[in-house]
View (cartoon, rainbow, N blue to C red):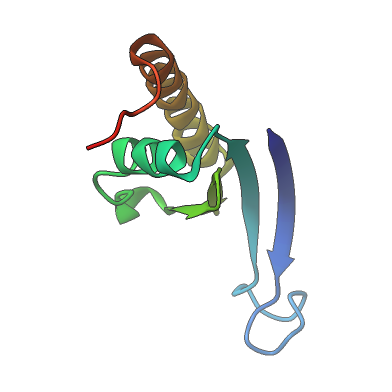
Length: 109
């Protein structure tokens, strides 16, 4: 697995965050999880992302499959919601991985 986390500052409309209050800090987190096959990565993605992340907490989450990797990206303005969203998701990811391990690779249709 590969993971990166960053705290980014995006200046306001004038480009200078010191002159107005529209500049915002964002927390970014990316995670890449390899699977034995692209099909298993797609199964995990569909299992983990049945519904979009609610917008009310300011967290944006994106899941994509690239080859045999499940690629996840979060962005949030508040550290608290950022942490809760990632922690909850990682718990679900662990459950999906355990279930896939228990039942084995998908068979032919």
